[in-house]
Image (cartoon, rainbow, N blue to C red; front, side, top):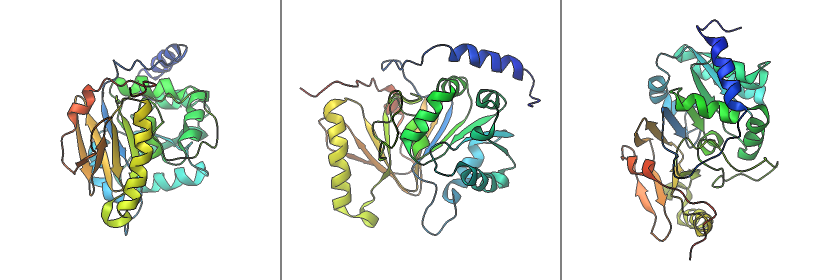
Length: 274
């Protein structure tokens, strides 16, 4: 099905790795490869991903095949068709994981992976069941570009514990990809649009997380994204967000800010505050 050199070898290697259980080692998680984690797909007055197309063009430069992972959505067929149309301008071929006879083989034949938005619990359960969770992690660790939107951004964290979604299904665990060693909270409220009360309510929920887990949380407002390239991390987009850490006041971040220091995080989950 795929004509990339060495595809069969890559498939076998992925299957060998998938025989092992993915275990997140909190002290060892580090940003790797080329990651773009978007808070949202839509910005007011713009089409899907329109606010981020220049950055997406840079992320996917040189990529011919993109594997789209639409499991978080309620209509994966329609979601795939929409994203295929959006990315057509970048001249990439989009393959849907849910339509592939073998998602692991489809990943082996791809140059980049795009994990879409929707419900994070539904997404995590699906990639746990079909073996894509460790497979994606291994590919990204060896250089495959990763694009994650909303739930796809949650999946890049060590855990999905900071998602905004209702747990409509029960995954085997909340452990996610651990491509970065801290947490992201997409759709973080913006003061001008959502008001101070919305920020206070979100911060209250995130402080509850910090009471039980000593892990920084990056709240990304809509229109913002986190770009991690190797050992560097920056905020991009038309909006910023806030960083919340245990025992400290939230700190605002803005487009262009350097967040590389977060990649040196040593997260401690299930570690209640004294």
